[in-house]
Amino acid sequence: MSSAPEPKVKPWTRLRRGLEHDFSVVKVREDIVADPRTNLEHPRVRMECADWVNVIAVTKADQLVMVRQFRFGIDAATLEVPGGCVDPGEDPAAAAARELEEETGYRAGRLEPLGAVHPNPAFQANRCFSFLALDCERVSDGHPDDGEDIAVELYPRSDVPRLILEGHITHSLVVVAFFLERLRADARR
Image (tube, rainbow, N blue to C red):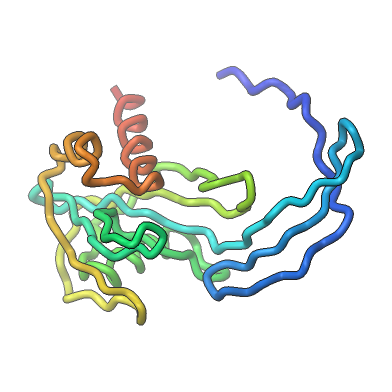
């Protein structure tokens, strides 16, 4: 296995920390940083978010357990995998199992980690952990959080490429979860 080359860029020094605005799900501030190459000052926005989880949930009948919910950024409903925030001190796998059951009422027979990505490292430090939940069984009607209105939908697992290519699944982190699952499956071959 080859290692990545040493980075040739230097870290930027924070000169001044900006005023923080707390919006519950995200804290936003603008810091002033110094370009290590020129020493010029630049404003940079930073968003503090909890880590997130996404769960590709598959039933014993090879059906995907998907959720449809309204997303305010695009003022429309999206088709996604179950997921949500990792609570402070919570293990991402525990968060994945919790979010799956809360949002859909399904419980995984087994849970496999697929990997983690930085959603937008330009101004966020959090990570999104993806998991594959296999042998899922419905154990309740689910218990969405206040402020969540979720419809659970089942799809044949083989529909994933079509759902993505036809634009039914447009959430980039959901697409990444399916890509990570595909990479893991290809690596096992």
